[in-house]
Length: 379
Image 1 (cartoon, one colour):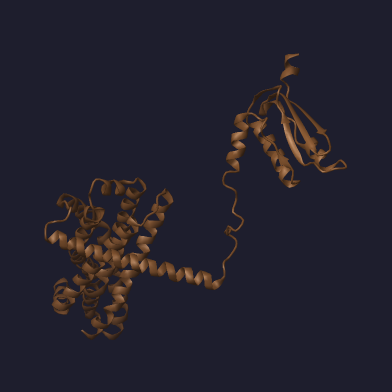
Image 2 (cartoon, rainbow, N blue to C red):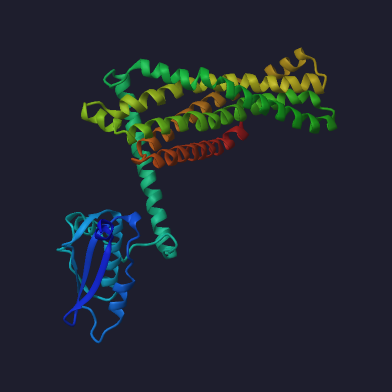
């Protein structure tokens, strides 16, 4: 008898011509094998008059869980399909609250789905707007950088040299390994390709000139810039982006600290100071790579290779490479910190900011290198 009393039961009956009353008795527990809505739907589709309202009788209803909620939601959907009134006054308070919560934010009918493409000119206009906003943000960021560096020179910036030294260690000595590896391979490649071609004209000795000039003027600084963009620029974006997600940047503002002076300036100053050193190191490693190929493959004596290298490298070429390296350092710091500051407030936004920092930094570095090609050619 107890099992019969607690067994979930469903009764469906019409009251008058347009009212449907659904009786719920027993314990509506999901694991007990609950009745379906077939009988309710049958009443909707049969009868001389359409159902205009549905109500529930829950006087003998016992315990319930999500099984009852699912049943009520299906009844609610049936009422919507047949344009009938759904009366939830007699339902348990928890079920009524869940039903109201589900209807609190209805779906927008004019929402654009992912598989629907907007018109071409609309997408073009949005792209132009995004580009203009990005350019404005970059110019504003550069202006704030100049102002902050001016405050640093006047000793009025909220700045700690200990932070700068820490960043210098991260982007300087700890980056020597990857810089040495890549530039050594670049020197090997330049020397090997040049040797294959120059040997045909009996001018293999000029391999030293080729490696030295190409490395000092262009390859050393550009490869170091790309390496630092992928290594340090991405790290800057990830660090500041994570701070943005954790609301640490807002905490700086709350306590009266300038996030730009406290976080961006040390990173920018560290790269400005370390990039010339890294470029010089990259030049030496790349020239050593050419030295290995020349002495091993072309049988050029070490002293002859060194003398040709010293004669081919001019002060102008050396300074041009160092200046380019410093420019790349500024670009890497700006793009990395900018994307980090612009990061959203979720974990996925940190990855997007990191990717954007690398792409923006490499693009700006290549554009800057292209702009200097004419001056390099004239020299």
